[in-house]
Length: 224
Length: 379
Ligand SMILES: Nc1ncnc2c1ncn2[C@@H]1O[C@H](COP(=O)(O)OP(=O)(O)OP(=O)(O)O)[C@@H](O)[C@H]1O
Ligand SMILES: [Mg+2]
Image 1 (cartoon, chains in turn red, brown):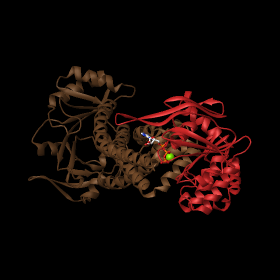
Image 2: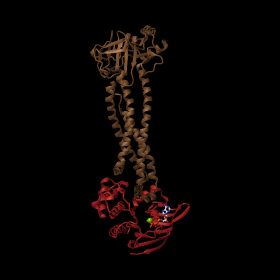
Image 3: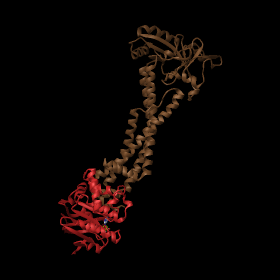
Image 4: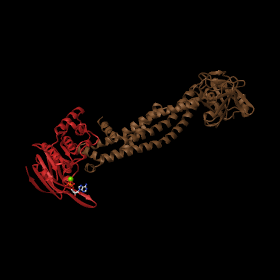
């Protein structure tokens, strides 16, 4: 479902090679997996590779049966559309669209007709508790509301894997808690949540915690 | 359809910039339409004119250029020769005339005099000519004035026209408006004008043919038979004028090209800025699953939309501007010189669209090529 083998990513920066991720192998079980580590340890790099935003320097990634490392940009985009959802730390939403239209956007890309799209988007907004904000633009929403709209959008096509990079990083603890609960609710028997965070308290809600340091997986901790 | 909505959303989110760009293209297109509308108007006026013109062949001295009044360089012997050839060639009438031009660029200070022989009058120029006052024949000693000329220079019946220090004529007839060149002419007896010019020569022979005779062929035979003349049938003249007009079109298009380039740069600038500002947005779209083509189309559609909307407004403004110009030229020379024909409107829209395409392709390509991780990294 979601599997990495000997995954490495090296960047060339000013003539010297930066090792952002080295030899990462892990098969993500169903449920929630947290990735923690100090700044610069390669968490975002790993997420980018798992989600197919970027291609590895070496190794393989498999998402929903597709070898992402072997696909081109557009093919990876198609896999993402069907099988992956994202929530970033901030600026998740398209600023010129309303909350409803943001949630409906992946459905538009998938070719869902307008009426069904809006129906489904409204339903998703209700599910994350911001139904009454449907017609608002992102800049009219609070940070917590924006994150919830982003979650609604990530869930629009019921992806197998939900990726979140510091989704609560900009939120106070109360709204951070709500966002975290919504994300965790998605992780289940079939579904996976990959949660990157600095916050060990947040990470402790996941079933497993992967510890990264200097681009290497140094520890796998079972919790919950 | 959905693409248009997204484009619309983005353009309305940056209203001021969008409006300025739109205006820029509109102004560029309008100026091009106006410039070119003169050519179209002239062309239309000319076609009407030629269709209405009496003489089927004009004979002038060789080397006379088509757009200035012919000098009196045709000697009386030539007239005899043409008359001699007339039965053989199927010529029904030869009118020897003299032309004199006085004045400058301003319609009210320029005068075009036509000296016509006895037995000829303005109807030989324009078969439908009629007088609104007085008589239509200037002979023996009067002037018949075209409606526009009469109006511009207050030449009512009985007014005295001074042609030289010892030649004066009274206005004996004023023509009805004919929406033709003759509206600006003044017709005089041939002898009078010859006296003013101090010559016995003629400036032009106007030739009418018997029904069924081919003007082009007669014109050619005349040129062969009489050296030193240019014989032009009206259809040939039309072709010649068309050629001259093409050159005019090219020059006007060249001038308006400057406006167009500025308009194109405006669109390119707007779209480029908009692309740069929205890098993160495109990153999000790509992250969610949009293909490169989607981003490309989105940006290109934005440029095309701006160009199309600007072009349409420009054509509209051009139509309005053209009719304003026509009010003036109608008043000044009695002709609608500017016309926005459907083909001109289409051409202008095509140019505007082409500009949008040109201005949009590069930013669109850039926007669709940027790496997802890089796009996401830029906030
Ligand atoms: N595009 C890039 N070019 C060069 N080096 C990069 C690039 N992206 C990341 N790196 C480097 O790779 C390493 C890992 O970066 P990464 O962003 O994955 O860390 P992180 O764990 O997400 O950090 P943070 O907690 O601060 O978000 C860092 O040393 C970083 O400087
Ligand atoms: Mg990071």
